Length: 287
Ligand SMILES: [Zn+2]
Image (cartoon, rainbow, N blue to C red; front, side, top):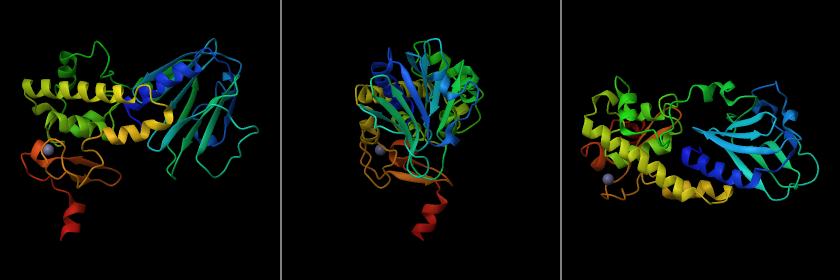
């Protein structure tokens, strides 16, 4: 799933490729991705793109004197840039193509979604705050005014475990399953540590890990073509998705805790005092 750094890189890429160009056609292929009906998709047509914004993991293509096209790529969605779109309308049905946007130049982009769980969402709105997920977002962790005091205030009274708190979009916008693993590894903290139990020194360490991890990931992704972002994300991760590999910091074996629909990875030596966290599925497999 694309998280803040990948969506930020897509925003950069689209700013360069879309701004100043006119949207001539918007073709819905999988109707279920469209979550709004007024204004209609066709209301985007005939308008120039004025700007591209990012809110958390949402992308917003703003048109001049027209509506906004807001999208959330979700777990298996992606954006594919096409220098030249094929002629003819794409056929609905099988395949990952969900929505196609064509420019006056013949270029454009496809929103695609792999797999059977369809979560990709597209909204056509007059104001991005009409999208409930955007309206609920907490502060952006890379914003200039997101300082340590701001982070401390967010965590004060937060009774959840760090892993869950960091992934909560209404607490902090843009961090998902992968980067929360990376941030906790960089901060050398257990994913199950209670947010409210952090000392001021630990809060400072977690804040620094959050900013550095995301900033570095954005730097790595920036300037890459949309198609290469997924591979870059994967290669830059130190623990997430690396169960069984050695920790790049200490060499211990990276472990996993799995849940019904996701899993987290961590390094016992770096993060949990050398103790593996309980994982029912793993212990069943090891018996
Ligand atoms: Zn380690």
